[in-house]
Image (cartoon, rainbow, N blue to C red; front, side):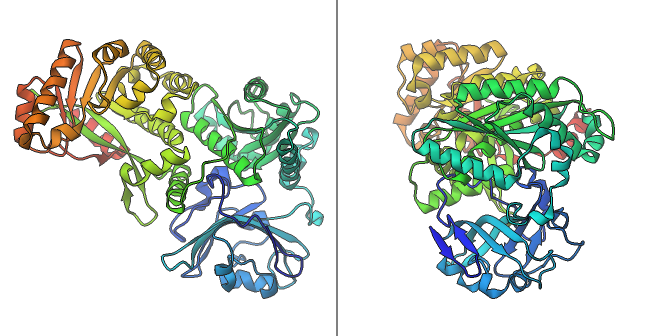
Length: 586
């Protein structure tokens, strides 16, 4: 869909996105957040912004002035001021009073500036992002980024990065996007698959952080030169973001992408990158999207960015995450909005870990805890799993949340050597053929954490593919981890199947525990499950224990551990709290 805005301004693709908005998503809550934390989404030559449509406050990310070539403080601080620089006849619909006429969701707009602008005149602006309606249906906020189009403003010359990387024959971001669009068109016509790969540097030695910041452009140029020397002639390369290279690999399957990424990683890690601040040794992290059916440009980049974010979250053994692009199933607007919010929270580090105590039934003393995800909203509110988990399971984002929660759990275990934690694993994650490799990578150098880590899988997920689940459990046991079957009793597992799974802990479904004082049938069922577990040599946890009488009765039946509001609700974990625990223990 293309709409004319006058004087050559064009809006394209202003439709509700077909994939999660990870690439154009920006930080919000104007005036209160540091936008430069969105490292993945802050591209060289791009200025990140957040516009509050109600207050008209327009907040720019760090480095915006340099990206747009203006002096500090010269950028407009309100939407009205920015609009005045464009001229009303060129105003994009998200910023003007005509926003209600535009489709809610993604926008990608190009428009020229005139002599009234504080930005050098005779240039074009490339503006992309998302806007969201408020309760009244009118635009409430928009977040995105703008950049000077290198293809239509050649007078601006090459960027500092391009001058550093001239030997690497690096494309501009605009040229890279044009090339990706062509490859997608060919894929749509059945000409074969290609891969969009994002490679980011990671420090081998944290002490090099200051040196790396000082020589960021030289580091990225050095990486580009090494990667380019190991690329095939048809493949292309750009600086995709502040700290990521982007590559387009033609005729490339998922497995071929993994092989190529390993080759690039070896090249980058072969020797320290020489910079004016001194040599900097690096390792790499990479995410890729392999596309064989065609997609829109944003969906391609979003999938690659999501894969890179997962690789960074796992943060071990130069991780590489490769995903194959598949159009998301059609979902209603509410599900999509919730999933979008979770995606933004993952990238903005607003997903937190909350720990609920699990106590010994015999003594009442804490024995372990369960890790539960919480999302800190932009207004300070906290969202629990029941408010977002069904939506992200439907859209497929749950695997990214699982990876993030595993990393947060391991950080807690590292910070508190006496702590034991159980973390949940979704069906989408458990059945991912590469999941166990990622667990092994996450545990590398953290084996003392493994023996204090329990993975919880639901009974119904475990039964989906019994043989495969059994093999996965055996591999996790070799790593030193424990396995718990969650919500036990809901799936009616047979005695033989339960024995074949070789799990360590059975968590009795709280549905049967919560009302058992009023239900003789529930009491009999809980006692039966407890007896079965005891016969198999498995420990038991009763969930949803809400009163002292229930706790006493469960303990008398031989249940090993108890969990529920009677013993404490889940509380957000913080490093400061862990430090207090260590001091009190000392």
